[in-house]
Amino acid sequence: MNVLGFAAQSATAPLERFAFERRAPRPDDVVIDILYCGVCHTDLHLAQNHGGFTTYPIVPGHEIIGRVREVGANVSRFKAGDRVGVGCMVDSCQHCQPCLKGWEQDCVEGPTFTYGSIDQHDGNVTFGGYSESIVVSDRFVLSLPDGLDPAGAAPLLCAGITTWSPLHRWNVGKGSKVAVIGLGGLGHMALKLAKALGADVTLFTRSPGKEDDAFRLGADHVVLSGDAAQMQTVAGQFDVIIDTVPYDHDVNPYMPTLALEGVLVLVGYLGPLGTPVNAGGIVSGRRAISGSFIGGVSETQQMLDFCGRHGIVSDVEIIPIQHINQAYERLLKSDVKYRFVIDMASLAS
Image (cartoon, rainbow, N blue to C red; front, side, top):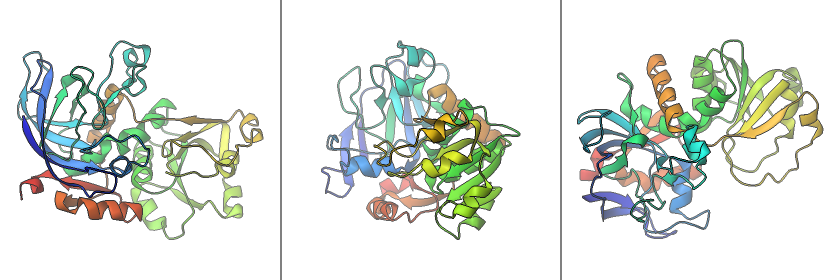
């Protein structure tokens, strides 16, 4: 299949139009015409080789909403015309313990990511959603609930599941007290989802002036984390803290705000924490620090269904694909509320 997309050819090159070949559909494949693709910070990091392991050319994009064009002979869950989504993964081994538990993101052999990964069957590099269409195994295709705005739903495939998974794992619901550190692409989804689950929700922020947006998105309270007096007022309160900060930061100030057996969950940062964690803040009160990475396929479908019932989508700014390089520049400045989404119809212009 000849496909047109946008790709980076090197760490310093802008993304530009790029023609490439998709694989011929296999019997268990779904061919999807892409309508919208969200723009994630990971796209920028990999396009610019911040991790030092990017293979070029790279076609980013793992927050994909589209419409089924055709299905393979062995596919029964989808049909032409269905609205569907594809998230951060397109395959896994399917037989290790994590995969059998529905945790494909923790596949022992390594999940096949939507772009920049090696296809387990043909050995080719995967290309992502900044493109006209994609071919994906039906096991990794998600149903989009009726009524959800497709553009706003695109970031649910990454930002949504990244924040839903720890809320689900720690049984957040009515009566829970949840705090969210940081108000960005992940943070705004954490506020929306925690509130819809019935929790009492607090935003921790270092920046004054975010109150109005925080309350609109679902926060019941806003605490300036740099204000010692305000932090003292929430000591021992939170069952779960979702930490969405995407860079090295000190988690010690937040530990005393956890309730007995409370947990702080890192979802926004994958690198080393430069400030040592004070063990006393963990041992006292049976508190814990944990981490969470996206979520499995079944859990992602559960999240989408929940969002469908509650009318939850991301706050987005829709852009044409021709503006992707400017969008990356703005991402570096945190100049978006709260996710960019590409209208892929613009690729034809």
